[in-house]
Length: 161
Image (cartoon, rainbow, N blue to C red):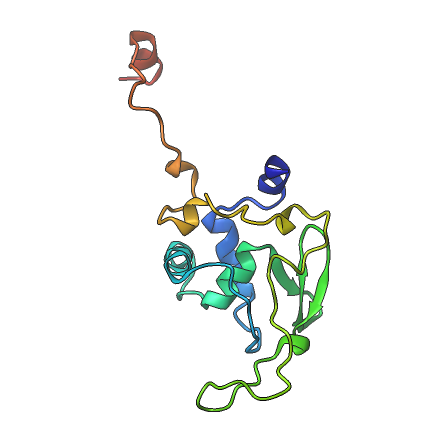
């Protein structure tokens, strides 16, 4: 399931940054964040290198979990894999000016739980080892090569050094 998820939705900052920018116009919603504050900060920092302005943390998290804006409405997001569509009006933030929730509060949008059950993005904690959330860039350059690898003469010649 992990290989399928990474093929369909690679957690690479250049890919996620474009999604987060396209989600920047979403209305204020109640988002059930699956990331802690440190992970959110790492994600926003990694994506800000690919966008003119730092992305909204909610938009960045929705993008990480595969949600993109519907082409016909900014009030609808959809998963690029399972094609699940969500009307954001069902999750609008109804807090008063002091931040207290008003009685009759609508549900929170769970960016993982809202995917269809067969969607590879609905698997719990798939993001736990994601380099974007641990301070890495989430690029191919983040691959760690073992320090025990010895440089052989043929490898040096092939590299032109």
